[in-house]
Length: 421
Image (cartoon, rainbow, N blue to C red; front, side, top):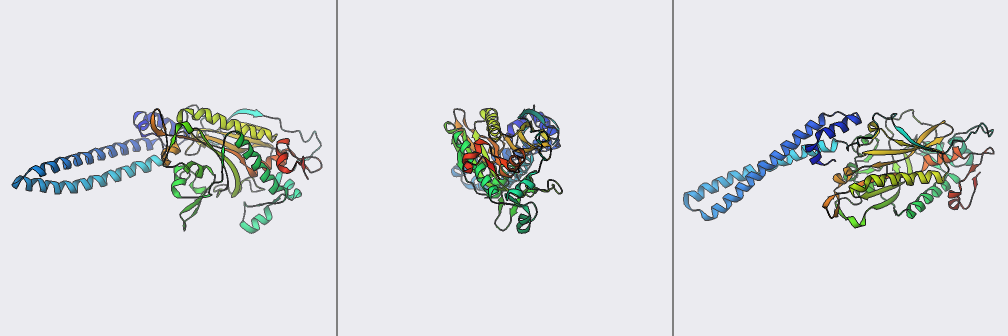
């Protein structure tokens, strides 16, 4: 959630952010009214408590009729204090509900618009001219089935649509990609983590995934647990209700976990192959830092994502995502889109978000430094979403004989293989 002080001192900033997201700004007025009611309720409660304490001291000194009157007043005050306390609780709950519905404040230079209004910041690499090479481009599913690497038919038989098996060199390729990603993350100073894929409601809500993204979340009501759509959830909650020493910052974690998504609203989209699926594995970077260091660290996470894609020799673009396409928690997000030859377009393979203090306030993650105790900032970034990287590798590195070229960076993790055949 945002800083309540900012809401009171600069409500127009919040309104501009809502407008940039394409969200109604009426919630700002509702919040201001709820905040005023909350503060008024607190003042009334504290006034009654102060009177209650004062009379308590007088009772000890009084006697006779005066003491009886004071005791009667004490009894009445006791009921008033209980009612005032209940009013405070109700007012705070109303305020908290509204605050949790308010998205993070978008940086004012983020592009305006929706999903298609991103700004391409960089283009790296040149897509191959397969026609000039005399190669008829095949898509990842045709290539993967020929290699014995991908089996979507049995995935559907066992689990339903949008599920799959990675078999043989497909499974080897996943392990190789994960090991390459983790080896790079270790070299960059990240601590590797295998987080749980099931989390409590507080973790899911704290990271903002029970807001706009709720329809895509799997919930197990019998256990009151959620299946994560990204290890960001568990990694963000890892330090919940903790105070971190500023000297230990930034704290960098690389989590590897399965990810589960309903893909609600995607009926008929990307139904072929393994681009849009209900389950996949992913290596996710997550960082805690001081708020003033967050923007620089965001650029660093983006640089790591670019490094990984370049090591795999994939053409890609860097996008500055428009405000209307940001998730609840992000103030800014950069996506990397890799070139998919069979589709003749760039598609999303990684993203990195600066969530500023938004998640940390919800999860009560704080830092202690010379300024005192204050909320931390959190950032996340996909290093390797396995299926989408496999698609990009198979399609971009297909050869005339049906084999797949293996970039040198990946070969040590595939037993030295320079091609898959």
